Length: 259
Image (tube, rainbow, N blue to C red):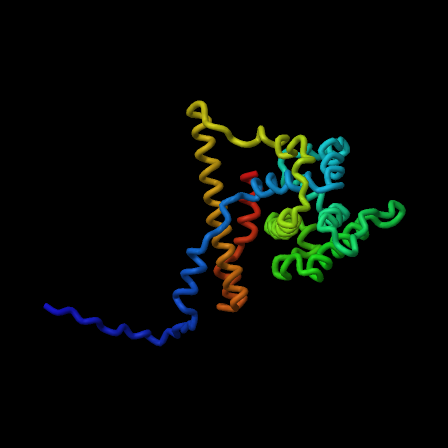
């Protein structure tokens, strides 16, 4: 008996045609994605930044600052918040840029008698502008001032990406002096990292952590897919909001939970 394929009527329901090649969609879904978490990226970047002349001052002052606890806040328990606060000072970014030994170094001082927040944002702006004008970082990889000062890990991931590119450029030019690092700042957070499990309780905890990491990784891949759809203008903004509703908020929450 020979089977034949019958055309199914659309019953008057409009169908959406797309001109996107299947190959392009496959490349989005199957492309390699970073396996390092935001925590690991921050740890690695922390040690490299400590090798930059003048940057150790910021790390030392923040790690040893007791005013954070005096204000009712908890001491730094992870490298993410440490770097976040460091970059928000503005002048720390100028120190990083100056490590490239540019013809026109950026100012790394602030006027204590003036509005400090405004000055810090001005230093952030000068850093971003210098990286763009001197072709250190591509425009699409640069963060904005609002992204740095926003309380959102999605924005901070972009900040980390920009800083990583600058630091990698410093290192590729042979300007990163790793010999000056006597103690890795990341060692302060070593206790928070899981070692080999010693009993069933630790095995269960490790499995939970690894499951959460995989979940966050999958969410980030879905996030990258959403960004690709937006960039290529594949579907309307209303459709994006319908399909991915609270995705950014979910990713932010899950990252904080994992940290």
